[in-house]
Amino acid sequence: MKPEEMVDSVTNIALVYGPKLIAAVVVWIIGSWIIKLLLSGLNKVMTKSNVDASLIPFLNSLTGMILKVMLGITVLGMLGIEMTSFVAILAAAGLAVGMALSGTLQNFAGGVMILLFKPFKVGDFIDAQGHAGSVKEIQIFNTILKTGDNKTIILPNGGLSTGSMTNFSTEEKRRVDWTIGIAYGDDIDKARAVIKKMCDADARILKDPEVVIVVSALADSSVNFTVRAWVQAPDYWGVFFAMNENVYKTFATEGLSIPFPQMDVHLHK
Image (tube, rainbow, N blue to C red):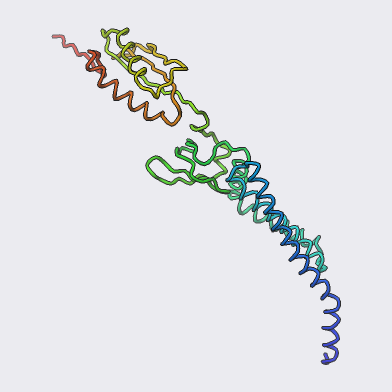
């Protein structure tokens, strides 16, 4: 090709595609600026509407990604690229990636469900997937727990969103249960009165609902009381441990026995 023909060819290409390229660049710049404004406005609206703080970054990222994909398709269309074939290729690639990352996508979907329906929030104490701890962070793919002995547990959101889970922080009050045994022959009424006195002395135990103290079993080696008391949720373990210690100390001074399994063996000659 002669230089003159090459120059003419380049000039024709520039005249045909130059305006489209300039227009596409301008649309991309203006579109990106508009998307930034929209995301900023969405963030302010969600903040004023008291949307969960863990949900705001996710919704912002998801909305921004969708808007940018739409903008990109628009710009490519302005350049004269056939979008039907492009979308078909994109769909095929998406299917392949989806099959390869099925577990990851399941965790992503689980994260979306958790953030939308909020079965728990940051700070709640939960028991799920065989692990118990306080929720430290809710991410898109994983939820991070912090255990009482300061271990970090990472749970995939897929199983967490579909499996059973116990949230100990949902309700303000919790019931504390004890099984307290006395020896056969001990005074049942006295034992009940002593237990009631210990419960009344602990200000953390609520008066309403009333403490329940009943004989629940005549066991092999003991007469068992079931004691049920209501406390504020943060006081649960403190009250539970304190009552165990008080029972051991008080029963000794009140002449009540805490029995242990024993067996009588008789020898016959």
